[in-house]
Image 1 (cartoon, rainbow, N blue to C red):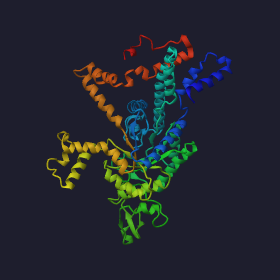
Image 2: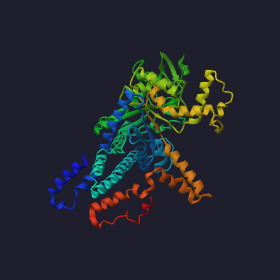
Image 3: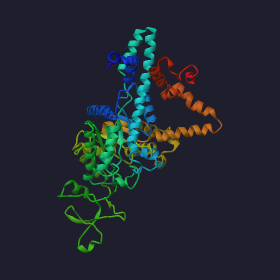
Image 4: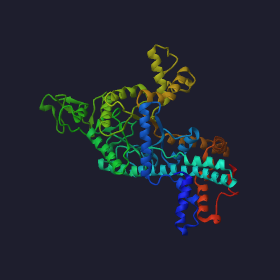
Length: 529
């Protein structure tokens, strides 16, 4: 409802309740405008629609891919969206990513943990709720400034300015955007996955990403030791997430099915199979093993399966895990992806060992031959050495073309000496174009960096500490932080305002009128900015 209409409606309501006479309709309408979303489910339904619309737009035009950055604190997510609105005027196509890696490393009560699902599962919905609390506060903060300006315009009798501000208020774009939330491997069985999914959705999640690893053996996607589960096990968890969405009325909720099969050489158990060629049989066909010629070849504790019409003893490790045949990762990825899309998933996530458009496209094209509208969420991971990877890709391309590469040492291409070379500059160009190229050629709808602010926080802290505790002293902060905040228009330079001081002052005036004791007077040093 437009602000002016809401003022009129509330004024009518106040007339019906004479004991509410000290309430100003403008104040109540303002509070409503500054708090658009009442519950996490309101947010989940709203952002799910946005994400579905974006997915449909990408299907028509692959240049309309989306992006996000990973967050480990509400303030980080809030500042990202404020920055996006500042620089690009709109949040369209920009989301947030909730990384299980960062929850484990930064949010667990146990302290820093590896990405192995050892952190408290409740930390995940808590972070979603926190992120949306800060995003909603960003709405309130931005609108508060507009409402203050509106009051000044009305006091000055500037009707044109007042009308322009009311239009901006009525058309305000929220900072609330979709969050792609990492549920790891579900933190247990399908029931555990369902229960945690409900908590995440109630907190505001419209999109849940789940991987096909074993919950109690879960590893980071870019580390060794990954163990996958048979498709039936994974599909039961996809069903659990979908039912959680449907139960809570988030019918457009999005499920991203992640496969770690490219780098996973192990499985915890042999799949159940009813007949040759069924899904369980296909999964088992990739198990490495030795053909059994006679009963004496079977030792105590061995497992024997029928594979391609022959009896085979799968290779079993001391851990009890079974081993896949070498060089079957891509085939298993393709089977995983097709199976997930045909059984309830909306999008895919293929965890790879390097950012290579050709490699990703090779798998995606096989998937699209069966599911034409297949779309990916892709991890632009800090676990990749991007500089080295793309320089090596250029080196290899040049070598294949017959170009002389004798001036370059492939193994040492990370070296600074190559920064301003033709190879180094072309590699940077390929890196800059990676997301555009992969969206067009490899079906990637959403590009994300899982844990960027883990690295930016460490880097900026290192730079500040080096100067502050060194010869620069206070100048390290002033020149390296505050002066840049002022000149680049970073909202946090007025940290009292960003934290809600002006909002609080205005509320005090709503509640107590002229008796309000406010913090924003002439003695507030924030006025120096």
